[in-house]
Image 1 (cartoon, each protein chain N blue to C red):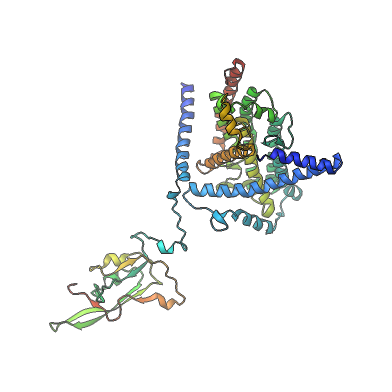
Image 2: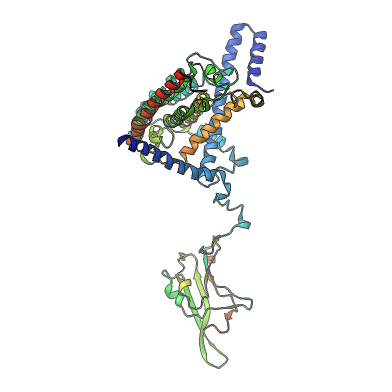
Length: 358
Length: 158
């Protein structure tokens, strides 16, 4: 049966058989780096195409349909165009920060990729504080956005960046609290432990209503943290032209655009890991025969299927809901999501202590 | 009570958002609803609405007869002078002189497709046609004669 685990083991053994251990490790580093960049490219192209198709069908249109079957090469052509374009730096800009900002944003996105379990035993680094690491590093991306907005020397960019800062800082609270409510159940921050604890059923089913509330709050907070509609105040085309990346063009803009989609993928991957069992197939309690059949589907397919489903849900939000005003955005977080998620953590803790979950 | 209002607020918000998502979800799963026309590709099967206003057209029947009496109502109704009626006198069977249409000149280059001439016509002689591929290389082709050469008014139309 196909598994990514076998592939990594094969590469590891082959390299160690032909090279000294240190060189083998270095070559593995390079392979992992190239694979991560490759994943970025594929995700960027694929998700932009998916976004445009989903948007089109939800608005009763056709979407890209000229280049390749169903227009799948459209995004590749767009990328080529972006590469060919001149990446201009405005004369008013703080040149060093202006040119650094897109790389900060993309490097942060790349760092969060580290603890994600893509398949059974297929993970870059199974760090023991995996979820904490993700929440800590993901808040760094706001620095890149603030840097871009500040250094552009443009009032729209600055406004967009400030909005983005306020938004990410406040929504991280409820995202963190809904992560905690699952950590209470698993008792471990390690991604592999969290996935293993869902062997007999995913947390969204085992955790009753509090888990579902936590899931919904996490999805809302994730949408806000990735600056996507209905929380795309940082960009807000109708008010701020393009927000923090107004002054960027060519490949520098493309890096911001790419990092938005990578962030969506990562956030959805974390959500899938916490609530929908990561790479764990759909298992029901002690139905051994049923569980065994489900195990025949490779774990990578389970992981990517769940993640892409969640990405689709977030796209569904984007093409349905109108954008919130700044005060409405902060109202929603501080008056609704935060109290509800605090109460929810309390309920979850009570449930974990009494052992009411399955 | 405060808490009841709060819960009602959350419930109402979630319900209205789900209503929106239901509609977009319906469109996502029902591709038949897509209204985009892939125009140059579907030229053969393209169907336009009857109310579409393309160009003014005078229908002729199989005997090369039309219903235009040459009354100039359309020329008077036209807001920017796109229609010019050239009339002539014909002698009918009883030996009387009668006014008839010689040339119904229509300038498509000036026409705004308002349709007032069609409404003004007392004998329903002109219509708006569905054609919309009207570009030509020489603008003189846009000045057209609507009644065909040798055509005459249909019997019984006054």
